[in-house]
Amino acid sequence: MPSFLVRLQEEVADSELRDFAAKFYEVFPDFCDQQLDMNLFTKKLQSLLPPGSGVSPQPIFAAREWGEQRTLVANRAIKAGTEVYCVPRRPEFTRESPDMHTLQVGLTEHLDFAAALPDAALTHHSCDPNGDLQIHEHGVIFVARRDIAAEEILSFDYATTEWDMDEKFPCACGATDCLGTVGGWKHLSEEQRVSRLARASPVVLERANAV
Picture 1 (tube, rainbow, N blue to C red):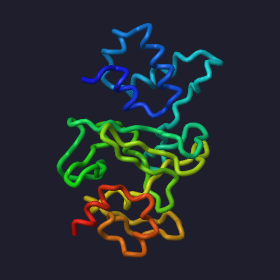
Picture 2 (picture 1 turned 30 degrees about the horizontal axis):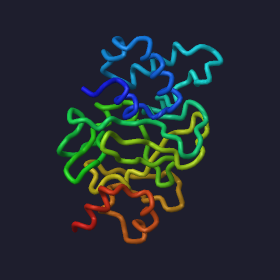
Picture 3 (picture 1 turned 90 degrees about the horizontal axis):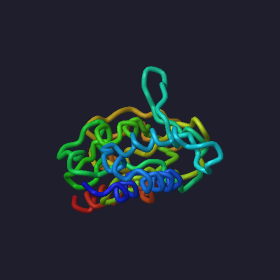
Picture 4 (picture 1 turned 180 degrees about the vertical axis):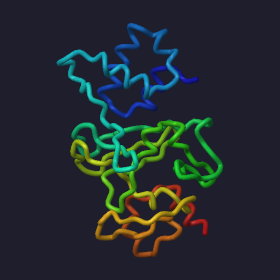
């Protein structure tokens, strides 16, 4: 397993929290090295933050009840460009086939959000999303596309990250270019692809070029 500090850089998006955890490691290295779930550990660590520490005691995101579902919201105001969360991309979290909780990170590789970072699996779809997903070798990072208000539902455009979704669904997000039905990049018209090209993942673009 990679060292604690390496995993901290790869799996924790909040830079302020990373700095605090690194200082905590200097004092309790053995304890930190025993932590298997980095996101759970940093959530617990936040409860230890003293007032006026300069690091927000609030997690940057939180799961909320939303009607009969659960969803992910901004727990505090988030500035455009902020890295909100990172889903670790490790072999134990990848699958050969997609399902409703996976994200396509390779032509035949799908990252199981529900297993790797359960809260991330609650991120909603929107045809006019407030975030984009950036795919890296170490993980998938949700980055705010614009300023996000506290309690606003976090979203990305599922059609820009999946070639052919395992479970297609109707969309009524209210965006001017709402797809109506979300099924993946494969099912978009040329006009729809052009309007979404800037936020399309390199994986779906590679797959489209292979057709």
